[in-house]
Image (cartoon, rainbow, N blue to C red; front, side, top):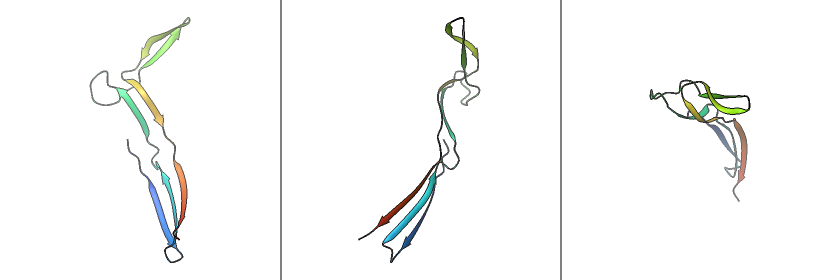
Length: 84
């Protein structure tokens, strides 16, 4: 998973006060954990199932079994510290 974080820091008052601002997950890349059912070592198309007349679990389409598919969000932060 490609994740890029960016952070900027600046010191003030004879290097006793420090302000840090940043953002995490700048690229907003998805995290996909899957079972490679056809063995080609890449994610092709998610396996999907459907329900008919109250019964669930019928194969509809797809190639790879998706276990986890998460789109994490960007997080912005500001941190202030002071040395006594």
